[in-house]
Length: 247
Image 1 (tube, rainbow, N blue to C red):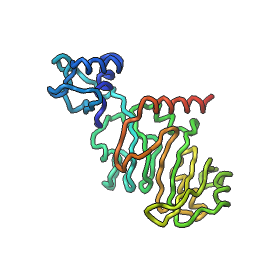
Image 2: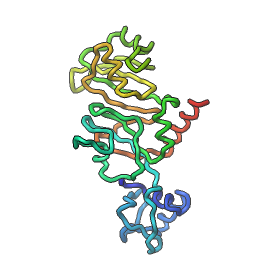
Image 3: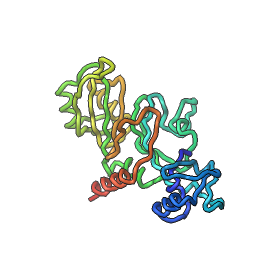
């Protein structure tokens, strides 16, 4: 599985709060594979030996909470396995908890922000339509999208599987490394290929589509194919937004 902060592993294994675990590390009582641990160190709990006061401790890796943001590369499948042997996001992770799931699938040719978590409630908050988490995309298109099309996208259009609308639809400039025009669109649902189908309704098929945010979570400068852990603050903000949607 992906490396996890040592204090999170200790806390999940029943060694008190994360603050208590941090004190164990500061006091020099924790070693991994015979080497002292520093605050901020990470390890794979399924592939290391963690010692407290020189004694091996038992870890239940299934209970280690893990929530990641990935910058999914173009051409990678969001699936555990692919019957055509194409690369998946889990191939990029290589090892991971069996309970790790993804929120808000991206199609193969769409890149950008993908959230993976062992927290089923968090996956629900980000994925289920009733929570209305916004998804923000940048589409690279050959020509600027006409103002009339932007207006109609915001008012809403009818697709084959129902009504769809954007809360934002605007041209934002030209790509710095190509002649393609950049178009920002924000939707609040996650139906299959919905942004591509909305743009295709007006013959504005994107050359490339890239998701940059989901709810309050931003992709930022994370490089393609890389992951980072969500902070406690970010996870709390997702839950706050979800609660607000239900009130």
